[in-house]
Image (cartoon, rainbow, N blue to C red):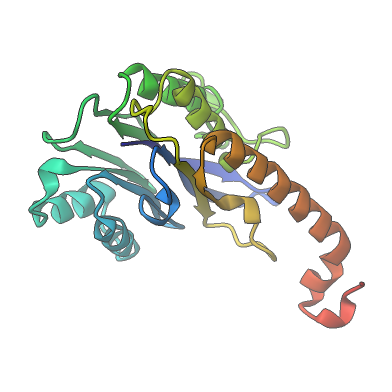
Length: 254
């Protein structure tokens, strides 16, 4: 009843420090998917779907924080889950990926696992949904920071690179254009995008954690929400940069 993408990117800041960021974007023909499916931290990104078990996401992140590899962490959770045949679970950490689709998920269902991202879906119109989602993200992915010669087509983040949240929403849009969730009789839908990174900010960008919980046009609404959040973030930084730098409201202007 859902399709989603989990990604890992490595990038450098202007001062030359290397960081990683992780993200999940998801949409479904049910309300409130942002409360159930995406789980993201500075250690990795996980999506739990089909017959959702939020504990898989919550405990999965805990295991990653404890130092377990994503494949070991999620495999262990599935092995202890009696409902595993009806689950989809996929994700990434700082080094690896993992994707699982239980044999009792509803057609069309499946997943794809790439070097630095995973996609998965169920109750879809077909495999083309995942292929389009993956192709859209991969065309604009950031996964090499300094040496382009280490891999064909490697991309380096620069000033022109759009934020990951924006690119993940675009990936959802590409999958939806191919058909998306097949249950056309369900009008109320939802979408969400969550991004976290090892980089610290004076004020965490609000466009990195967005949800549209109930609408008939979830991806368009999520994109509009992103645009507004980006505008608000830029306006706030322009007006209150002294406040963030001083960490004091004494510097605030009306």
